[in-house]
Amino acid sequence: MHTVGRLIAVVLFIAVLVPGVLLARAWARAGDRRAVAGGSVELAEPTAEGSAALTQQAVHGRRWRRLGLVLGIAGIVGSIVLWAEASVFLWVPALALGLLAGVLFAEVTRPRPRWVVAQPHRRPKQAELVSGWLVWSTRAVVAGAVAAGAWLWSAGELSDAVGWTAVAVPAVAWLLAELALFRAVRRPVPAAGADVPVDEALRTWTAHLVTAAASVLGLLPLGALLLTAGIDLGDRVTEHFDLLPVALVAGGFSALTSGVAVAVFLLSWVRPVRQGARALAG
Image (tube, rainbow, N blue to C red; front, top):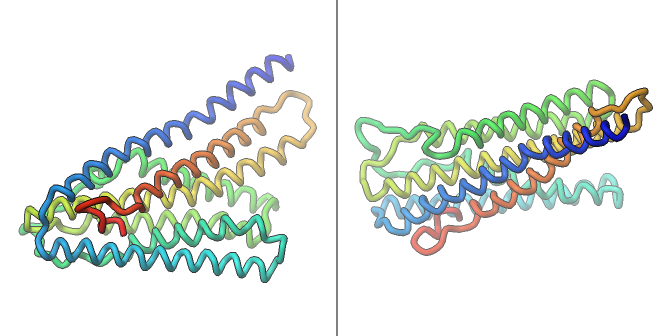
């Protein structure tokens, strides 16, 4: 009986890892969109307004990402002041939170380009900018992180400070991402055909940056919460073989590895585009 239970546990563990693998594969395929968008900008000869928009967006993105870095460092300093050497485990999360917050605020506050828009107004669909699977998986991850945080918090497994953080961070990241996506879709396309590739690339970059940032800020807390719940349940003494702790630990491990993988793909979208499009990502 125990042998069968262990076999089932192994199969369950592998099955729970599958969504993370699929998510990483989807983000790898999103690189094709980046290549097409960046290549179109390299081949285009934008108007003066289009070139000014590239420069403006690049400066804006750098400014906010630097501010995010400063906020992350400030978070590390604050944790040292409050908890001294016990805060060492908070340094990486604080820095990551600051950097990702900078990415989100940079995209949600991007100024509109000052080119002439097409008449009548034409706007792209969200599916033309980013895969719907990536967007909906982000929404599902954030919902799972908020639900897991609220569950553990209500069960008394989390302190008030940790509970608020576990619930608020993914929720706020999701709201900022949705607002940035809405602004990217609602902006009319430019009238000049030479500026259309620039406009499409800017929208594509924004859509993927905010989706990735919100995914990371949902996946990492979700993974930590599921691991905590699985380890706590695993300490219980039960009459029969309990698969729930195995599923929670596997889900937590899958969420953490997926969060790290998406963060790696996020770096490729933040990285400046080369040659003629090098100013695009700042």
